[in-house]
Length: 216
Image (cartoon, rainbow, N blue to C red; front, side):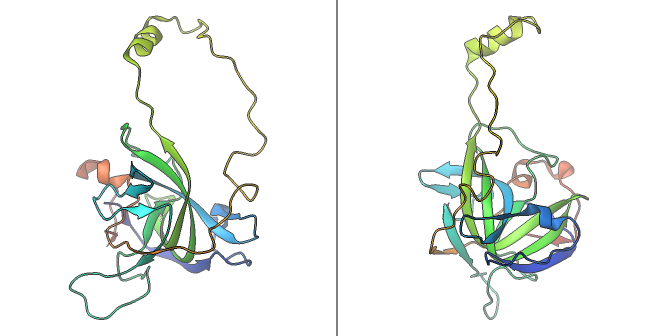
């Protein structure tokens, strides 16, 4: 499971006022069509119908959900996420951080985080988020390779054309900003004590970054 270091920010997202974040954390904010400021982040999960299963084998969650902490064996309750607990939805600040596993049964999720959000140092220059509410905006599934097509790719010279036409991408990336992003009016309550950003669950112990705080 992913590990975070020092807590660097504790704020509320999902309002019409952008959070006052330290350093470069503000670059991870984006606005919805309704003018609400949310955190744009990434994680891995296993799709299961219209839900997603954390790689740590915790409970499945729908595309839009609010975390509720029910940590076993603890006294008292608190609102998720809490700095002293592992509850809340976990996600990372970038898809390009080290250790991205490549498996066809994983899906890379782009998520909008809102409600209370905690930011922890991650791998030196990234951010590990834990949030109260998570809305899955985009699902990128890893494609299975066609054995015949893969053989053709091996035999083809590097400068040979492959029959695919080039295209000019749109000026604004799809699902990346207020043009398409809108949060549902309400969301269900979910037990999310065993969520994980996903990158670390598929890595060997030797490849995981060291940290002071374990986020289960």
